[in-house]
Each structure stands twice: as C-alpha cells, then as structure tokens.
Length: 221
Length: 331
Image 1 (cartoon, rainbow over the protein chains, first blue to last red):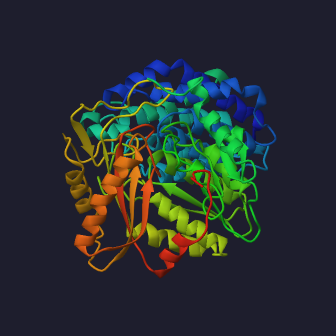
Image 2 (cartoon, rainbow over the protein chains, first blue to last red):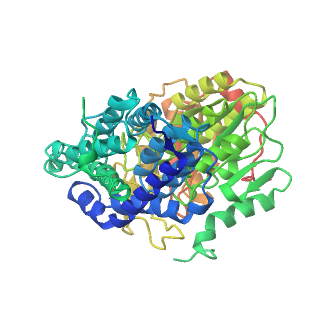
C-alpha cells in the first residue's frame, strides 16, 4: 500500500489553511444564518497563525507536526471552535508522534480518535448537525479501504471528499442540537452547517490541488 | 477610561512582572506563558496546585500563589481563559512525583483549555487531575457557563487544599477535600457599576446611576435581575437569603463569612456590608468562626461585592487557620 508521508500531511494542512483563509467571509455568512456569524473569522485566525509560523513548525514526526497545529488552532480560533478543532488535531497527533509516514489503517485510527475527542470536548454526537456529520462518513470511507493492500490514498481522498460534500445537503433540513447554531433551535432547519461545509470544502480543495477528480474515486464496497 | 496603563496589550504582562518584582524571593515569572510560580516548587514530596483563569479578577488567582496556597498560576488576558499552551506548560513546570492538581473555575473557556492541557500532559505520563469550582448560586447557566459559575468560593478551595498539600496530602486526598469544600460553600454577588478592560477601552455593560445588578457574574454577566439601588442592609438581606437557603445552612452551623469586594468598593463599605451579614448570621443561628473582608475575586474596578458562606467542620477550620503567604498581603 502507498503510504501517506509527513510531506503529504503538511500539504493537506497547508491546503486546509488556504481554504480557511479564502472562505473567511463565506463561512461567517453561513454562520450568520443561525449562529453568531464569527465562524469564518475564527477559523481563518487559527489557520492564519499556522501560515505565519509555517517555517518554524516541528517536523520531527507527523504527530509532533499535528500537535503544533493543534496548539495554534486552539489558541487562535476564537470561542469554542478552537478547543474543538484543536482536540481533533491533538487526538490524531497523539497516535503518530513516532511516525513519519502512515497507512490508511493509521488514518482510520486517527480520524476515529479525533471524532471521539470532538464528541467529548463539545458534547455533540453524530446527528446533531455539526462537523462530526462530515467527519464520520469520511472516516467510514477510509475504514472501508484500510485493509485493502492495493488502495490508493488519492482515490480514497476523492471518495472522502464526495461523502463530505453529500453531508452538506443531507443535513440541511436537520435541526442543530449542539454549538452556537443550536441556540436558535428550529431556525437552524434549512440552513447549512458551517463546520460541515468547511470540512467538505477543505477536502474538495485538496483534491483540486492534487489533481484528483471524482473519476478517480475509489469504489465503495 | 482613566487607568494606570501603558500599552493596553502589555497590561497583563506588566502586572505579572510587578507581582514578581515585589516578591523576588517567593516567586518566579515565566513571561512566555504568563506563569507565576513559587520559587521553591515543584517539590518531590508535595502535590503541586495550579490554576489559570482570565485576568482582571485579582488578587485571584496570580496573587494567591505562595506557601500554603497555589504553587503556580497561568492567567489569560483580561476576562479570557488562558490558552491551552499556558495550562500545559504550567502543569509540566509544576510536575511532581506526588502529582498536580488543577483547580478550575467553571467557565467554558477555562474548562476546555485545561481539559486539553491535562489530556496532553497525561499522555506524557504526568499525574495530573482537576477539580471544577462552582459556588455561585445566582444563576444555573450563564453566558459563559453550563452550570453554576466559580467565584469567590474559589479562595476557600485554594486555601484548604494549599494547606493540606503542605501537610503531605495525596492527590486523591486533595480531590476529595476540594469536593467537600466546594460542596459546603455558596456565594452571590451584586454590582453597582460596570468595569472597563484596558484593551477594550469601554465598559463591558451599561448600568444606570440608580441601578444595581443582583447576582452579577465576575465578567459582568447578567445575574438574576436589574433593580433599583437599595440601602446596604436590604441588599445584604437578599444576598444572605439566596446564599444561606441554597445549601441550606442550618441553625447551629459553624461558618466562615466572606464579604468580597469586586474591585471598586472601598473597605469602609465592605465593613458596612459585613456588619449586616454578621447580624443576619447571628439571627439565623450561624456561629461565625472565621471572617474575611477584602478583595478576593474582583472584576477590575467594578463597584460591588459578594457574600460567601462556608460551612465549617474541624478539618476545614484547621486548614483555614494554617499558615500561608501570597503576594496579596497587608503585613
């Protein structure tokens, strides 16, 4: 199986940062529909800090790199989104502090740990219309291919981007049960969750950057 | 805004440096992470006790670092939780073979950042546990909390755990003690004015000349209601009723009574409030064994006060009487 290297992880984070900065206004507009309209600005603040410190980040292992990302996100993303996104990166980091390359099976474990951490920190569960509703299907795609020795991580990424994108519309008519969006209750029905949109957009932008298209998507079994 | 301030961005750092410069024997200052810690800690034979919350509540909690009190504090900016890194570095710096106890006031930002820091420290093999303080009876949930807020009662948890740690208590002993004290302490506050964080430059809320906020939070969060200002005795009546009926305290209880200033109320007024509270304790049949009248947990220059009752037992009373030192002292 083709492994995912530290350089690949770096590229993914760099790409996610570009997505967050490019969509600062759009993500805040989404948040304005039912939340407090600061999500885009908060997320961009965190990823801007990563851009600023990019050259100094610890690159001794994937885990140490992600741990630094976690700290910058936690510190610079305002409100509760910082600790929630930061916990996601921290849990993934904890499993890879001695690794400079990972398999899809490792990535499955990392995403699972991230999902558990985010649930624990924020008190949300899948179905509450939060970023978990994008991350869980993405993890499931990775898991499906984790045992396949011929799996191509790029094809799995394309499939993951597809299921995350599907989550945007699938959850539109749900009522948010956690996070700021939940304060407005029924008003969240019919709106897009900014966290879900952010995850999907980050994955789609990464696909574009890597030149991976839908046609490359790994077949779901 | 009229304040003693240079560049507002340096307000907290300059305060911390001042705390250190005034106590060069007792304290050390780590500017990179806003940490003030005891010069002689960590020690191998004592659990380290740490706290980190927003600044602006001084003397809580950086001026409560010293023998028999906190071993270290890592405050955030004014009214902002400390970043996770500060908490994490504070735990690492105070790591002792007997463990580290983080005393956390119940605010979402504080809890999330400390929880993450603790998780990270535990993953590195550090024996650290935490306890959450929530003594404010004013409101059940607030703009910054799920559940009750942690306010002036924090002092009693720090003082008792600090004393017990000096005597060699284990981390689990201290957790049990913190739980006991937090379970026996109740507080409610009232604000007469708002306050102005230096970097914000404007009051955090508006309140009329003739108004008070009953049940106010220490970041100016709304309390139970806005009301017309009343005579001091009538205000104490309401605070005392809310606090004493919550546990509830009972006739015959031995108590510690605290009147805590919110920063902008002079000692004279605090003693006017204390008089009224002491008389109500007498009427209710509570024996006041220890008295505390001072600024303990403030909101910058807010005029206002809070009333705290702590039910005593022999252990708590003994620990409160144990020697201690901190930057906030008058002798």
